[in-house]
Length: 361
Image (cartoon, rainbow, N blue to C red):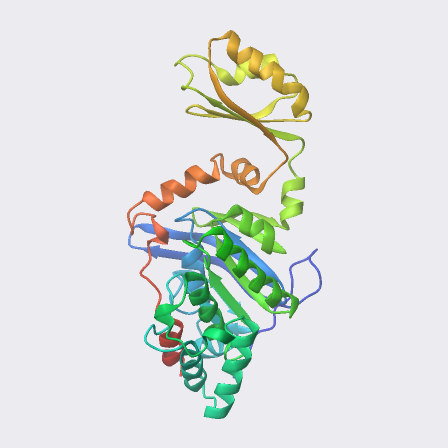
């Protein structure tokens, strides 16, 4: 079977690309979930796909894992074309979808052995590999307990172990920590870091800003089906000079009052001012000096200030600059949108990793 070799785009390190997607389009009736999405993921990195609910992240994963066909565009994963060589793609990838694909009536070890057997392993080889992964993911003590008795974090670790049974070249983690409490989330972050240390290529989708910042060597920010920014987290934040000021008013400013003009006149150097109801955001080179002037100007117009914060550039600021919307507001809007009209990428749920493996054989 033929394969395709792709390399990093000009200006990037000379590394082969584990994922190379060009101009991906996906339509569901009159809903356009992806609108010409480009994505290049160098081999051996943790690459973050960051975006609010409904941005197109899960649709992208379903296309790259051959669970959905694109309406337009092309992509290779681990050197194989997703349309012409879908079987090769499935043999070379592991997938952890948002919904757990394990059989809750089986033990952790039985789930892994089953996955290994589906991938063509002999019984002894599957057992040995299962024990290796259970030890690595700190599930030794629970290997012979049924998965229905596992905690949420333990179940996600079994999902990851299942996806690693056949030694894939690329691992897809589709929002793996959604719904988990912070302590369990931090534990899974450590698992991802250990995979990265071993040179595994990981595509991580998330709508948690901190998660992308902590784990991704590089990331792409997706909004409304397109990549709006890409680079390392540090480089993206470095493009934003100065400090971010966020003011929460006790109530929105009255109609007719030009808050942007008011603040520009009050504090020199204040820029990128946005007003969203009672929330005012701006950037300034020296936030500590500008903050008293901002407060004085607002109070002079009888605008009561509930709180004011000053911070260094964040990925939320990057998203705001690229889209004109705060990340949290976009995330809430995407979560509230009905499926098929932009909510949750407007796609049906993906089959479990076991089912996907059975289909590929």
